[in-house]
Structure formats: C-alpha cells, structure tokens
Image 1 (tube, helix red, strand yellow):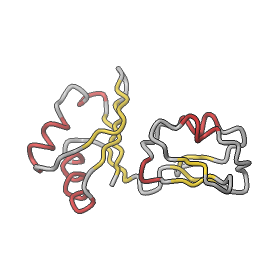
Image 2: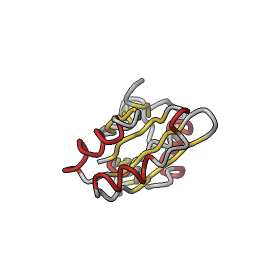
Image 3: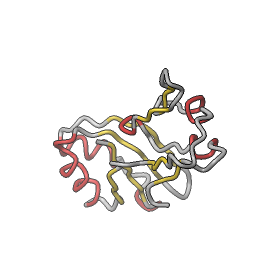
Image 4: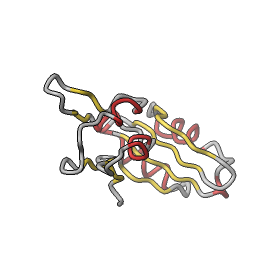
Length: 129
C-alpha cells in the first residue's frame, strides 16, 4: 500500500527513513519525494500487512502519515477521453482501451499530480478536494 509522509522542517535533517527501516525491518520503496527548505513530502510503498507498523514508527518521530488508498478521484462525467492523462503520466496509471475509453490503475499512482494539471476538463482531483 502507498502512504504519503509529510515531514515538518525541524526533523527533515534526521535519517527518518533509515531509522524506520532499521527499526521495523520493512523494505520501503520510495515512489516520489519532494524535499526543499520548508517541506518534506514522500510517497512510499509498503507491504499491506506492515502498513500500520511502519505508519506508527513514522508518527512517533513526528511525521504526518496518510494512506493513499484513493490518491486521485476520476469524474467520468467530466472526462472527454482526450488522452491528456495517458500521455503525461510517468507511471502509466492511465491506459487507452481498444474501445477508445480510458482505464485507470490507481495502485500505480504516486500522486505527482501531472495528470490533474494537464486535464482540460478537471476530471481528475485529489481525494481531499
């Protein structure tokens, strides 16, 4: 399962990922990371059966943790099947089908938001919107 981690500035210099991997023994895959002087945000992939353990380890270190069970919401009524999302998605969440419709595999999404920026009809939004 994918989870998103948000780090406050005061702990961004700490080796949080390494500490959690060593503490839990869980192998974590980093799908996306954005770290600058003011914010740290990382999307990681964790085995489903170990999500709670890993999330608890990050929380006790002062990290905000949220599961990405539905990272983006697709509004079929707004979609015009233009394929903008298909062409820009770096992890192939979107795919054209033989019947010229678009299918979506949200398990691949890393919440880069490129598809949302490119969609001319606003058919894609984050789950929080």
